[in-house]
Length: 424
Image (cartoon, rainbow, N blue to C red; front, top):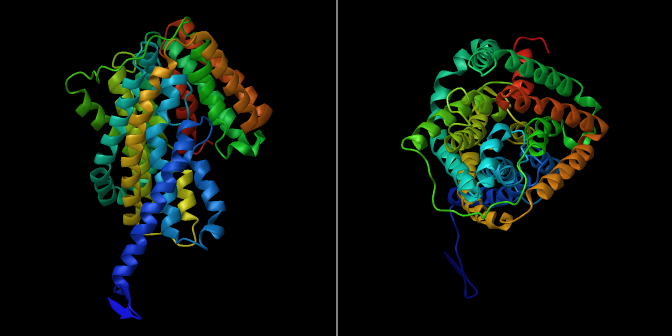
């Protein structure tokens, strides 16, 4: 403390001043990231990767006012917030994105039963559990897996192939299951292989939006029930005994797996979890497990980035492109702050379920379909419209032949296998 001309000034030691500056950057970055994550989570077609790309493009401008810790914190906080909120539009509107895919089916089904708020709250609970389990999983992976990474990279395709084979063998009709898996896989290879034909507005992986929206969105909405949306009510979370613990652990394990391994995503985790938690037989536990997987995927992607210098998402690539990469502890703290804010926001938004009470379901479905078509054309152009049309046709088949829609995940799993085996 110094006194000059009657003015009292506090003088902090340089080290303490640096700590205060870093904490300020972390908190402010987390706040900005929460705002960006709300946009990407609630607006279909916009991903956290998109927002991270915007922040990266503004790096020169932002560095005139802030430090790299602020930018990196904002990027990672956007990703964490997105994992909490991305199930909201899927629950109420039935629109999936690259991270929710299969989880949309039971969540939207609960909404059609008048339990939309419960579905969103279960999703928030799963993501919160994922945050709590991320740190011990990250520590274990960082200590054990880097030395095994070459073998892991080689064996990814075999793991996916084994899971796919198991799902097909135990299906109601293995022949149809294999056919849907193979056709959707071919569509996935075509979509990603010729993604350069899409307009650049959707980003590098923009074709996933029309691909997954056709398979798990429009195809479902076209066959959905009609009438009026039932009165939305919340009487508590109805999870069976042990479902929270089991779903959290399974989901976190799946999220850690796809977060660390190359070429995998939350959509892959959704497919893996169906072998342990049925989305039709245990819808609430499946929502919880996939939400946990989605959030753990974000944190383990950060661990992989710092431990083995691998980028598992567009957000990690954007952080790696910064002029100076901040320490992992700073970004983790920002992610934890964002998780608290995102959880509270998700609970708040779940109360909007009553807005949908009494809405004509047919008109709502047609409005959502029109929105998805226009968004696909806007993001990807005519190629996006073609992918959406083909994906809708493939997504229509499971209901006609009475098999589960999980086999449409071939659109994601087959390209991952092809990448792992060096075929594509």
